[in-house]
Amino acid sequence: MDVGETLRDALLENLRSRTWRAGQRLPTERALGEQYGLSRSTVRRVLQEFKRRRLITQTVGRGTYVAD
Image (cartoon, rainbow, N blue to C red; front, side, top):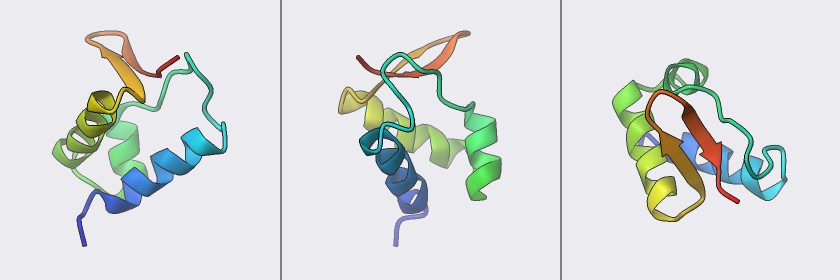
């Protein structure tokens, strides 16, 4: 089992259920890591996957947001 799978599943569920809406800011990498007991590198890897899939956008210094 991939260590990021729990985070990946949780993020997808939040997007599908519209808990997080387009343009909404996601928790920080640090907060997600603490919430799911994962390292920031694992969180970054999952977020990069979501960015490649165009589910989120990231701006240095501003944060991670749900894509429109």
